[in-house]
Image 1 (tube, rainbow, N blue to C red):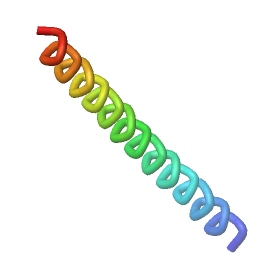
Image 2: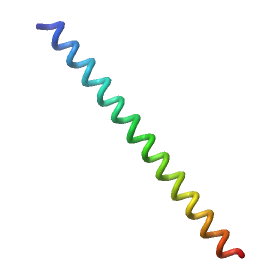
Image 3: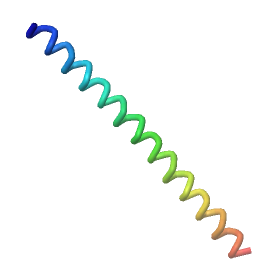
Image 4: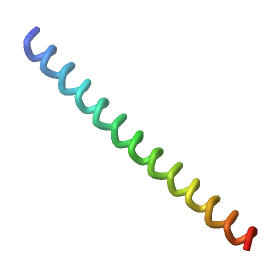
Length: 47
């Protein structure tokens, strides 16, 4: 029983870790995208 519990805990940790990684990737992508958008708009204003 104890072994099963530990196994579930490890699996849960791994799952939450993967979820965290994915959300980090998404937010990094979003911030890069918005930065790129701001840069393009700035260039348009300058021209």
